[in-house]
Image 1: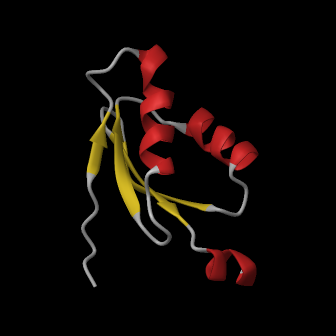
Image 2: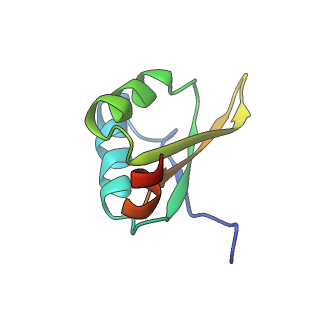
Length: 85
């Protein structure tokens, strides 16, 4: 099983477009898949949005926490894992 995940670097994108890109990327994930979000600030507000809209169906793991770059692995939890959680 590969531990590499595609990266989505939103730093060059206008702030107003970032959440749309991130959620579009998440929606295209298959069960158990993920991607690494690269951002220029702590995406904690994004985490709260995921928690509100996708409770129990996503994973969130900080890989790097600033001060200049944040990397977060965001995954789609498959239905079997969500039922056990």
